[in-house]
Amino acid sequence: MGHRALRVTRIAVIGGLFALLATGITPSVAKAYTTIYIVQGLPSRTVSVSVDGDEVVGDLAGGKVAGPFWVKSGTRSVTFSDGGQTLVTSKVKLPAGSNSEIVVHLPASPTGDPVVTRFDNNLQSIQRRKAAMAVAHVAAAGPMDIRVDKKVVFANVAVGEYLYKVVPAMTNSVDFVRTGKSKVLLGPVDVMLEPAKLTWVFAIGRPGKD
Image (cartoon, rainbow, N blue to C red; front, top):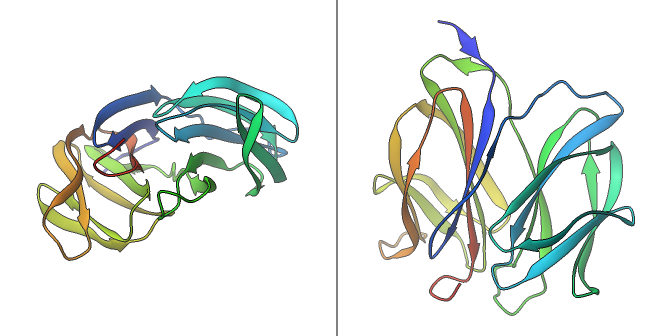
């Protein structure tokens, strides 16, 4: 069977559903550079983002995505601020030619300071009529099970972790529950998994609040 290169769609699950940016990603970038997308996982804030002191985006609301941005590869200093006040600065390793989601989000404790996590975009070609799906837990909650059509497909996922899977291209219902439990914390949301697309689902915010 033939294979197709991937494009990317992102969805944030914030108690309800917020549809994020859907965009094509080209894997061919200069070797000295890397491609990043900024995912704003702090629903109650509007942030500005700088890389090595240079602002790349301002006034980014919670549940939104910005990019692509091309920055030099290597270890970069990424700073998120709100109203001129620094929320968090993180050293992020960006391999040459990589393609990444840079997510600012809450830790497991809802009262904790924001943290930054990098997720790699796996843009390897997949079989025709197949779709790629990546689901990330970046919400203020302990380990969760990620269910597709009410069946656990990713179990005991901690904050800052994600899982990737190649699946048939179709619409699935995705929700998040505490590990080993059945009460839904976030979602459900219907996710259309389109052929030749990598669809990201991010759980962000505080379950039951924002």
